[in-house]
Image (cartoon, rainbow over all chains, first blue to last red; front, side, top):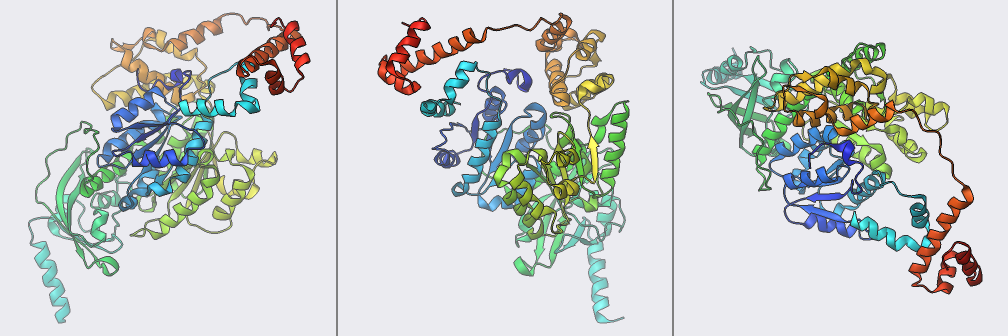
Length: 163
Length: 456
């Protein structure tokens, strides 16, 4: 699939995901703990290239990237983000020793910079707000009424976790 | 002459006799000494003395602060470590010329007096332009420093007000206001529809300011940050005042500020309006905040604090005459990025662009151009290279509008009711008593409705 054709892709059902790009999986695990009740699924990638491929498939995603040495590649991708994926947001997670770069990463376009897996609460809230804002697939009136029924909360959570 | 002046003169003579550039920064990053070889290398004489080198200058903007920004040391020097890193000189043609340098802290920690920098006498080999591998490996602080330094330079040149090309009076007014805004530190509100380039222009105003007065830019997306916004504002203000080296107060960019709920407006006002922060405020919105104030949905004090200069950006559909120029601008940006060179658009392709309504504004135009740039096989983008949706939208617009379709409400509601009963029965595994409970009706009534709706 060609990257960047955002407006075409917005018609796809799966336009927004929560994607984490990191080496070890510890940030994704911490995020999953925070999001357990919301039932939001976390998609993991290990390289920036894979992460951006996922983003191309789901162009309104919330992307969490671990601060990494090839920052230039990340900064370059972030600079292109508003044009390629205007509905996506990127947040940075990093070891505390990289706090010096907190401001730079926000300036580059990150919505948040978190320096410990124990402080993922705010990031989880941001991700939920972003996903709630993402364009939902158009549904019939019956679907919408059905989804609003109180005994369908379980099914809603299941559908959210599948996103 | 006093002995101390003799020693000082001797020290200066010694450093000036070196065959490589040497400079000294004080603990605030201000250049307090630059030897003669350094002055010759940079081509600035001794006028660089007193300039501050920090990431937060705009190195791509011409001027002494731009030169100073290229000499910025890695942050770890300030923690007392001796490190090697790269310093940068921007040539007259804009090319980056790099040299390795050794940075020695004078003192350390709380007692840091300054930094001594000894630069290699020859330029480093030219760096590869290709994007490095994106496999995650161990962090190298010095490489990181260089990357951040390069980012600062590129950011300043990437965000320019040239997207404001066009002939219409609205764009002409916006262009003048952007120039006015970049020349000062007044608050700026950028009003326009989504995709109209509000954030891009906010950055252009920030980076286009006086290099010695450009602090850090902190964009905050109000709807996404939601209830966490006050904490993020407070953290940004604190970061500005507690960094290792004092830097000019930065710019706070509140994106989509018109979507802030009332309670958060109160908190934002208490942080930004009722006390002096020194930070420049910028914001984006889809309509002028003054109108929201009149409608009672936005705080007057916050609106006033954010709206000293109000720049209105019209939707793309209201400036169709600018489409060819804008499309060509985006095309040139893509040509500049890579090997693929496309000359322009055929008249038929431009007609197709003109016939579309552009709900996504400039962002959508940029994406259409990018997609067509990839698609094009010839020297120009032709109508066949454009995305199909532009053709479909054109055909739909050419057809006469269909008369409104009507429904029979009872039949329509009956279909909805039938589907909900069917689903409730499926959920109750066919048990009518349980399905009736789910639907809040008696079992006989459910049975009657099933018969009436043809479900039994």
